[in-house]
Image (cartoon, rainbow, N blue to C red; front, side):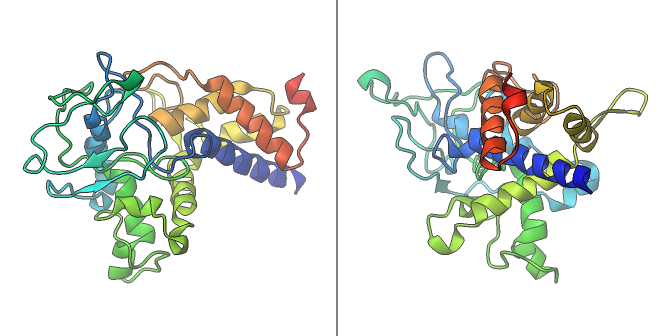
Amino acid sequence: GEDAAAVGLINVATFLSQAMAESIAAGSCDEINEDVVDGSLPASNSCGQFGRSYQDMTCSDDEKFMECDVYSDMEMGANPNGRPVAPFFCASTERFPFTGSADYIAGRAPVDAPVPNQNGRTDVEGCCWWGRGTISTRGVCQYGKLNYYLGARAAEEGRPARYPNIDFCVSPQAICSPQRQDSSIEWVSGLFRWIDDVQSYVSYNGDGGVEWSYVQKLHEFVAGGMTDGLFIHSVSSIVTQGCYNAPCPGYRGEQMTDAGVRWSYFLQVLEALGLPVKALQS
């Protein structure tokens, strides 16, 4: 019916607005180095920003069989981003015993000495799991699930695979491939994460009852006239930090400083889709 169609459209609009915030507005498929530590941007932020360790973002016990293994000799780099900050890269400590700063602020040369990230990492060994794609697929669990359902592992185990020749656990940078024939991967990986990680998101309280459900809150948001900005704020929190009520456990950064920008993107997407926005802006 009309209500179901409205819910579907708003779900799409919410996804697109998050994509605008995560990658489109930044003009980068790869996550940008932005977590300043003691005045510098550590190159080791590729291991994880704002207190997180991406190689330790593992799956729950019942999904652990899908996650990627971490190999010390993996080596790759993010695409050029047009900024005065070196793109993320990962490599073994045999190749790079330590990493310095990645920024070139005010003409200052990068620091050629160990510069730790928030977790104290001064190397980039096993740190190939930074965010990529429209809504930043990151961590060994998300890449592993992408590979299990859509990549080479699906093909190897006899399941239909959208990308049978791409092992996302070996080549996570394939998400941001500059090759024209691979241009869909950035969006498909984002849609996969949206379906697996956001649409299915449910948080439970201490008694085992549902505390916050994306699907339930989406229906309430639409039924309420789409005026409750807290819904977009909560979705933004799930996308960026992994829980609906930032700051989330393990995240050591400022609390959703771009919430207003993400709401603005949502309104822009509604307008682009031809949905009424005047009531939302009043």
